Image (cartoon, rainbow, N blue to C red):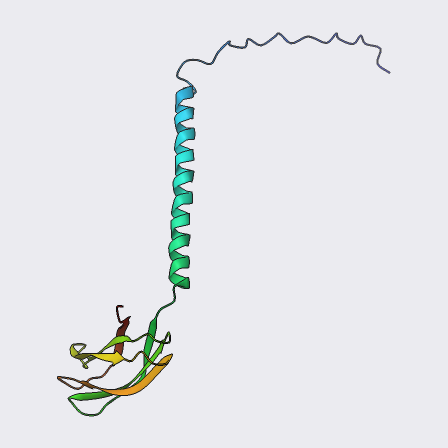
Amino acid sequence: MDHSPTPAPQQAAPAAVPAAAPAGRYGRTDDRAADRRLRVAAVVCGVLFLGLIGWLGSSYLLRETALNGTVPSFQAVSDTELQLQLSVRKSAGTGGVCTVRSQGADGAVVGQSDFQVPAEGDSYVKVVTLRTTARGTTAELLGCTPDGK
C-alpha cells in the first residue's frame, strides 16, 4: 500500500472566450440569408419544373387520338406501284385523311399520297395502291388527321 500524499486536483484556468467572432472570418449573416433565399427559390423552381413535366406526360399519355393508323403489310407490285394494307382505328363517326409514303433502296422518297378514311364505323381496313416514281422498298404511315368540323 502506498501512503504517499495525494496531490490536490488542480483547477484549470478558465479559457478566454471572445465576445464575438472576428469580423469577416466566418461569413456575414446576410450571406446566410441570401443562401437560404437561393435554396428556397431553387426548390420552388424544381417543384414547378417537375409539375410541368408530370402534366405534359400525363396529358400525352391520356390523350385519345381520333384516328390511329398502321401499315401492317405492303408489297411492291411493279416499279411504279406499291400495294399496302391501311388499317385505321378511330372513333365512330370520325373521318379523315392518312398520309403514306414510300422510299426507294437509296432512301429517297419515291411516292407519297393521302388516303381518305370514311366516317362510318370504328375501324377501317383497306388495301390501297400507292403510285411511285421508282421501285418502293418501304411503306410508312406518316400520320392520320381527322376532318375538321
